[in-house]
Length: 575
Image (tube, rainbow, N blue to C red; front, top):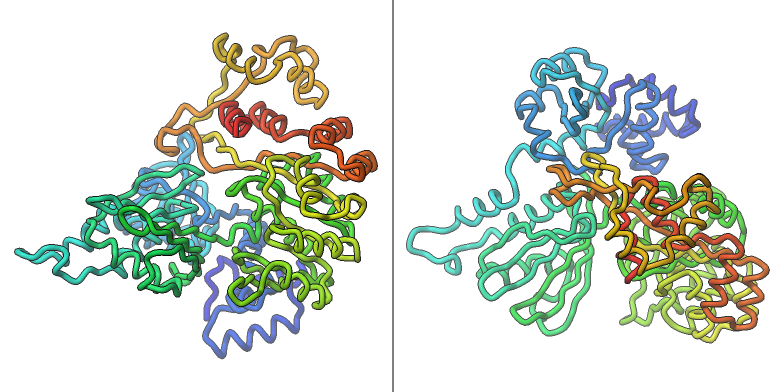
């Protein structure tokens, strides 16, 4: 079958062999399999785990000198899509995704096709900067030319209503309704879908960049059918309405599998559903993408090279701990390493990692699962969360006996982790010998780059900030960290950034999120503090002497660099 890539099969083979992504034998076997199954060879190679789609397209992008864009990871605005009509978009297999002055960025399945490029430029009437995207990404984005969620759901429901009959008396196409909700959540880059019952309606809300947005109100009459459909998909009990239930399922959009984690609880007006969309983003995300500074990245590279010990990631629910854990696993995931995980639940399936999920009803807990994993000859163990004394003790001993252990805890900051583990009954000398680092993090919203502007703090804002921290001390700290020059004498001289609000960010001034972090390294001085059961305050004092940058300071660094706003950093400080 012909390749969907803008290069020949011979060129693809040459590139992959040069990059040592496959061997000649690997290619020949995949080629035979592709012919037999009438599949594209690149699909077979991705399926067999030699690389993922992102790696493939970035490799081709580099070779043909055309930037790659993953349309599934971008929020596509209707105003930008409308600049190219649906007919031309499908004819040229092209999607406009960003306008920058008098230039439009356009994603092409084949950006080397001069006829298609000329066709798009003639319709747009502007200079076009072509990008490479996959055929699946194109078909995914092309769906946005159809309708919006309100129109589509209203149309689905209205088709079923016959004159003289109420909605309760007609057959409700609940399958189509659920499918439409899931599709539009993916299009909007939502992380969660909330379905909530009101006295007279069912509200569907999407969480986008950490904020909830009402999307559509549906008739109250479809509530039970909607919940029942989701329960069936997640393999839950449809006749149980009195207790919470959790499950998961997968669905496909344009042959691409998406995973969903489901939580259902009984509420006053009926059951409430929250569906978490588990994208594959964390499988490829880097420390830079998460928000690690250059200094913290150096620390991480130094620590992950250690063959044993413990790495803890801490923070409240929804602070991105799991994503950070998976990014660390990606760094460790090589041919010579056996990685095993025990999770609740498994959030992302990762190639070449042995993942298992706890089942408390069957007696399979973190503690029992961890004991079993230790008999699987692991080099690296990832525990979803340390929740009890038994798991903590086994994890620490595993880190002490030649395994690298990764896990999460619920503490507010990095220095709160050692006392928390000690409270679980772990001996202080064991923890001091085992702990490598603690990473604490929060999520803040990023400034929308479409409407970013610089400004200086007003007198009123300076007065308000002075109530939060000592401005002179913070200014001196910035100089110590070499974030600003010594010539700055007052805080009001510093330049900060914010988003004015535009159509691309729904007038919010923000787009997407990034982590602010602090890393506690277990230096010899910190070890002594742990052995003598020092308090969090003592640990904090010692860590700062050793050069730790706090979450708040990391956040302020990002405000000075135009990544986030001072309001977002103050928000996480007050949490």
